[in-house]
Each structure stands twice: as structure tokens, then as C-alpha cells.
Length: 540
Image 1 (spheres, helix red, strand yellow):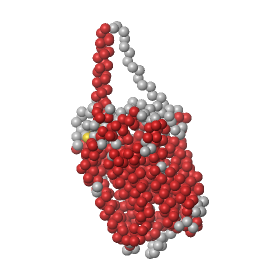
Image 2 (image 1 turned 120 degrees about the vertical axis):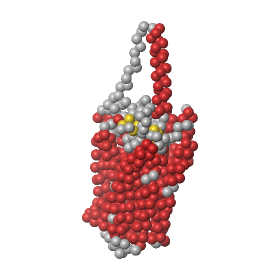
Image 3 (image 1 turned 90 degrees about the vertical axis):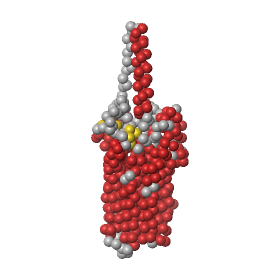
Image 4 (image 1 turned 45 degrees about the horizontal axis):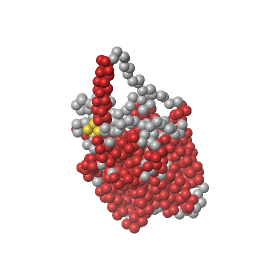
């Protein structure tokens, strides 16, 4: 079945009608083909009103902040936790590394459940579990206890890493994904940057334990909002992205054949042939909307759900593009870890001697940078992709989305060098804040582009390939969490960050190879992709 599609390159879609000759079955908006093609069901998330779609995106943001902010409140108050509990700072940082590790591997458990029984329930379980775990954090008395709740919270909060990347394509079309993915990535990194700022000042006012209690309260409020306003976006649609034109031809041929048969019958019989009744779509009740999980018709089988728990490892081996997307996202996470690993040691000591509240305030620069990076990799990248598609006879290639990385590669290097050299020479704190802001703009944009590129290439298995991307990303983040302290202490801040800057530049510029050979890699993987996509579709 899959072999008949091998001539169709995964990810290559006709997105813009430049000639006015769009396929007969295409649905258009402002000259842009709607990909994936929405059904006639008014409850299809792709058919929701703009307000309803934006509410769904807002709930993803609420979830991301509701779990991302509480679990990162400790970044700017590690010294106070150490002073009160006797747990060494190195142990506290190591616990954070374990949390990142479980944030990746936990996706192997949660993602298949979300793809089978619904996104809403997984979001709610994740957020609710954060509440008691943050309370437990406030009672930490030993390194083993700290490791335990960091590991468990990493597991329960794992959906923050991969599930929004599924929820957004559930609701938005291909030409909108970049901007909406940028909002999510901004929320992900923004929550992590806002947390130290809040945590630092909250700690000075109420102490580190009440800072953890605040995290529990914040997660509880997020849970209540989501329980009443988050809708299920899971929808099992017929057909695969990129094959709409082929499916239209098959449907047209079937209709012609059916019409011919009806004509023959009507000429030999006086009986009236009635048309098939139109499909009846049922609007879910309030009780169904508030249910945590749903057993929808067409959902994957239990056996297929179990299979998807190990498929991400296979995809990493069989689809080089997925591995590369994970590498780009991972290298950007590394620079984020570098920021968190050095901000407090640099600013809490001479000549700055900042309090935990002031250390948290330095994250204002990264928050502004994250917003700029979100806009660059989102709205600007979407418009640029449409412009390139129009120049390419209306055909969008996923590689069109990669060109914004040319700017982020340079910005990442500049930001890292400004931070390291500035800290080494005791530059004014404003120089350091600007350097961190520039670095964060690069980090957020790079991560957003990598996620969008992965989805654009392999949309119909993106639930699993996103998990694969997150595994690579978090393994790299886990490694750098251990390596950053000896790296900058042995080399010195200046040499360490000059090296990091050129590493960031070189790693990100690998996108040039993908713009050259990316389509060839997708073409080479076509038979495997359509096979897996068909299996995933037939399992529904």
C-alpha cells in the first residue's frame, strides 16, 4: 500500500494557489490551500472558530506555565536551600539534571496515551500531580529525597516537552504552525526564565519553602482553569498530509464509476435510486467535554499504543532529519543550561554580590529575548515560508522554514561571547543582561524552528517523531548540566564562552546542509514514511 506513494516526497505540499488552478477538492483561504484539509464536521478542530482555536492555544500556554514555572523556581535560590537543608548545591543541580532526563524519557509513556485516549486527560493529570510534588519539595531534608521528587516531577511533567507539539497541529493549518509553535516555545522557555525572577524575590520575602508552596498554588490554579476551559483536540481524520490531490483523484474516479453504474440501472429500471444520506455529526455534551479521557471511534488499538512507546528510537535511526532536528533543539537547550548554570555563580559573587532577588531579575533580559525569538521564528518565519512557496510555484518545502536560523546562528555566538567575556572582565550588569537577551532570542528561535521543521517533514507520525526529538534534546541537556561547571572553572569564563559561541555558530549553520540535501533525505525516506503513516492511520 505504501509503495504507491513513494513518488510523493513527505513534507512537500502545494500550499499557495499561484495560478488559480487549485485542485477540485482543495479548501482555500486568501489564496492559501488549507493543509491538512479539514473535514465537513463542525467539531473538527480545524473547523473551529478563530476564538475557539485561540482559547485552545491559551490553554496550552496555561499548562506550560502551570508546570514549567513551578518546577524551575529553585534556579535562583539554590544557595538558600543549601544553607537551610545542608544539601550541597552540586546535588541540587544534579537533581535538576535527573528531572530533565525524565522529562525526555517520560514522553515515551505519556505521548502514546495522549495519542490514543486524548490530550486533555494527560494535561490534567500532569498539572494535578505537580501540586503535591511541589509541596514535598518544601520538606526536602536530604539529597536522596531531592533526587526522588525531582525524578518524579520530571516524569509527570514530561508532557510539557512533546504534547503541545501535537495539540497545535491538531487545531492550526500548516501555514499557521510556525507562529503558534513559537508561542508555545516562548511559553516553555519564558516560564523557565520567569520562575527564577519570581522565586528570587519571593524567597527574600517569605523564604524558600514558601516559594515551593507558591509553585504548588500556581499549578493548582492552572489545573482549575484547564479543567473548565481546555477542550479535547484529538480528532481522527481520513487521509494523509501531502496525499490530498491523489485522494481527490481516487474519489473522483470512484464517483464517476458510481454515476455510470447508476445511469445503467436507471435505463433498465423505473425504480428511483436514492442518494446516500449525509453524514450526521453529533455535538459533544458538556459532560463529554469535561471528561478527562475519551474513547473516540477510530482511535489506535491498545497494541499500537504499546508499539508507539518504542517507535521513537526506530525513527531516530531511520529518519536522519528527526535526529538532526533533535540535535538543533538540543544544542539550543545546552546554551539555556549554560545560562542557568553560570548566572548565579557569576552575579552572587564579587564584584556584583547580588542577592537572590537581584539574580532573578537578570532573567528580565532573557524574557524579552524569548519574545523576540518567538516572533522571529513564528510570524516572520511563516510569512517568509509563504513568500518562498509562491516563488516555488506554490509548493512549500519544509526547508523553506530553516532560513531564519542564519540570523539565530550569529545571535547565539554574539550572546554567549558577550556574557562570558563581560563576566570575566566585570562589565556593567546591563551588558550581561543584553548578552543573555540576545542569547535567549537565538535559543528560543532555534528550538521553535527545529520543532516546526520536524512536524512539517513528517506530519502524520509527528506525535512519535517529536518524542524522538525531545529524547535527543534532553539527553544533550542532561550532559551539559554535568559539564558546564568544570568547563568554565577549568577554562575560565572568557575562553569557555568564546569556544561556546563558535560551537553555537558552527552547529546551527549545519542547517545549510539541510537546505541543500533535506529534500533528498525526505525522498529517500518516502517509502518508510508512507508505510509508517499508513500503519498509524489503519490502526485508528
